Image (cartoon, rainbow, N blue to C red; front, side, top):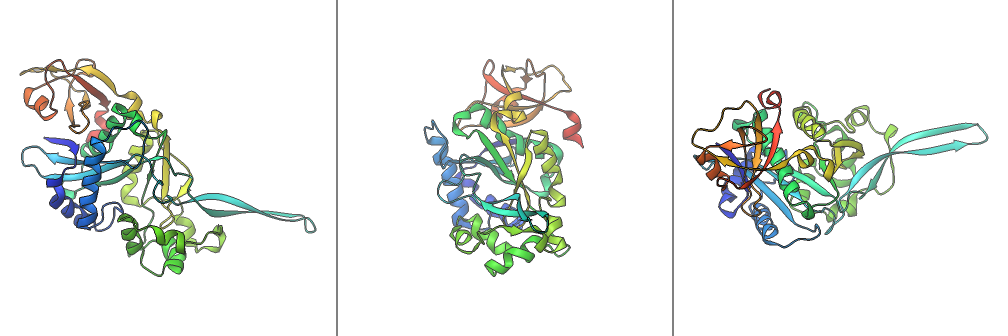
Length: 343
């Protein structure tokens, strides 16, 4: 059975393997042992910390196969971004040019470098290994984080954002980066992503143009890439939009991928999940309803998928053991549509 739990120090070799498998597709999962060790340490420190307001805490969770102990995926949440260094985005806006003499008014679409998302929470580091890639596992890996937020709302900001990777061409290159970023950074986007991933972000402020970028001056391929997700992550975008995340005119400064945002309280899995009393039985009542269940522990957080009744969840003792729960304990319950999990 697959279960979500916080990442811990013995997981470091498995995280290195996931980072290698991802081939740089996840910026916040670089193939850097020192950084991955820090990621684990920060998660463990954040779980031990008493928090009344979100700060520089981060929480990362792994998808573990309970029988073998294999780590098949990872996902994370940063409590408040942009505190140590600005979190840069491009805001899509317009610049108005007017000539009274010629009676011409032009509205030119433009990209404005900003850090409007400083102080928000961020979903990050989502990667699912190819062998475990299925709709059910994708929902478990992504939505379990939301149950953690629902259980500990004071640890997170009022808004939550998530960045999606932007379009690439047949050669795996970003048209937006090749047209714009390369001229200012003098490196491949993969190297810029890597430096950002290991928190070496000073170069962004030093090298990025601070004046508006006029969209019509970009190549057609670059213009077409703005706010478009990479095709292979469109299912992830669909899941996030189902959670209530929306695109509101902000894109990544490297590949122009869309940034989605939502009020944290309005995230579907946050407000829709409910606390119920768990029943443990050797022969639980059959149900066709799929549920995402989690306990209410902090450092011992656990979540998994089962079929049970949403109002009176009833599970087998071995499943309760994985959740570190017993009969009569509170359990957080989120009903999920079978069609979403089986597609």
